Length: 319
Image (cartoon, rainbow, N blue to C red; front, side):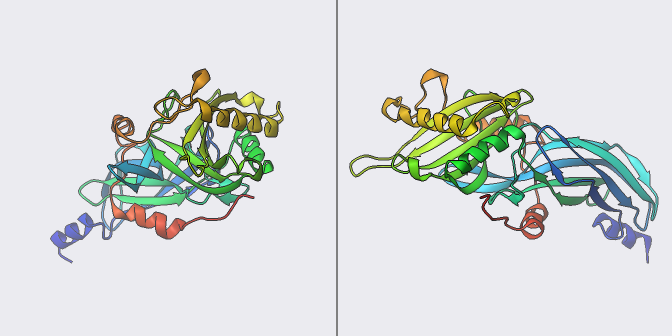
């Protein structure tokens, strides 16, 4: 085969290096890590590897004007290797340990994937003068003990899980490092059904503890429209086994819904220093841009296809 033709094929990735990432364990929790190896096999010709990086990617809902669409976002990235030369057919295995951010959203509860959640580890192999290669591996993020106690309490109170997703933006008054937040939606339990339709639960987790944000969707009456009120509660990790969480969560819900008669002009029931959410408008866009690659949308249809094909649409209730 003529050398010029070989170079052209190599530029399109034909006969070039291949990459396959193997995770020691695809299950993790916020604040822990994902360990694994990036395995390389050289192609038909020598290749200059510019860098190898791994990053966490997920699907995020993004508001644009009057519409909303979903985009794939890489929100956390770490280099695995700098430049080096890879010989033809050479095999290499490079270990890595990727810290998982504390704010990483939960994807799996009670051994089941939350309907609406996707999470993957993307490996990027940048090859000089050729198409970059990538690999995508499914990741499961399980709740921390404090998350589990609160979710258990919602279940014990009779709330039924509806859906979970990620919204691009920031929550007013909450110290947040990622450019999105998770909403875990529940249908109202029978004892609250006369007052609210649904509750959206958000965890913003740090090394110290978790900010719990509740959004209660009020049921409208014959002559009155429904509206939302918000409650925000800070809990340290050390309280996970120190409280009757059914009683605590019930108290949060009753306190939050008691603000229906005390709404501010902007619609947020926020006495006692509690704050409502800010949507995913300019604040979220600026935050995403400030994060650079980690926090921007990942280009290319291949990643979207991988989410749809390899990961599928995970459903199931966590009852």
